[in-house]
Length: 322
Image (cartoon, rainbow, N blue to C red; front, top):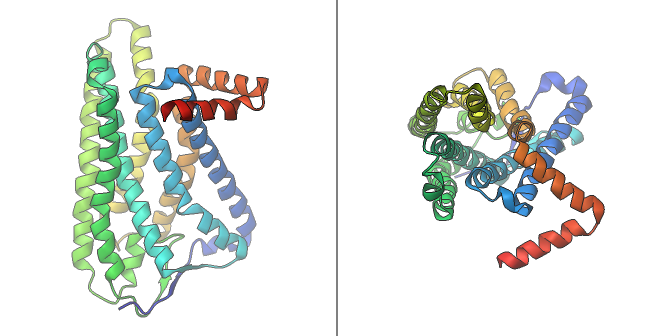
């Protein structure tokens, strides 16, 4: 039985005096995140030379970044702009599900990307035969379907709890910990289940990535030339940077009982992962990537040469694929 029709999100009350400055900063970062990830998807889609496993998995990760930030930030910006702090019950529960579904998917995506880099560096002669189009598609489906299955059942349980009194959530979005704090029932069991889910998803993904990178680093050390070592490391340095930031933030926030911890610190850390990291990751993945830079220059040159060529090329590509 649900008696609450909406929740109140406290957000960052200490920044109320700088509300419009905060709005401008978050909006700018959101636009950078959306533009950067859409640019990655567009360039990879249009440039045949980027139709390879590494960029296929990067595209999947970019879709996750886009969805993860879009499910939270527009509502956050609306509340800041209109100086309101409410969210409907259904919207709140949808936010909980989509946020954690995307989060679980991104963990698996990062693991798959680690496996791809391990295969490319440690087994270069077998790479093309191992990383076939079929395997890439199956691994990507594993990430999205697996993330959905892992989170759906737990989200249904959270949705079915009775919420019948206090409806103030000390967060800027509907995070599961603050939600469970206002439930009119004992949430110990679902918190423990969520904690163990976190251990399975996060630690399983982290250990897999750690083993992959241990093998990668060992293989790079065995390369005799400094130029060879530098080139090999550059192919995985961007992914390693995102892995370090992503896992550090998620371990800090979620590998503890859901309703525990300093809410102010959690909000700041989650703001980094949901706003700052999606804005930075396109640059991290492409800044030192010469193949992507060449492909981007080629796509932009065609577009500047003929204003309609970009749309025409996109339509032709879609037609050929169908």
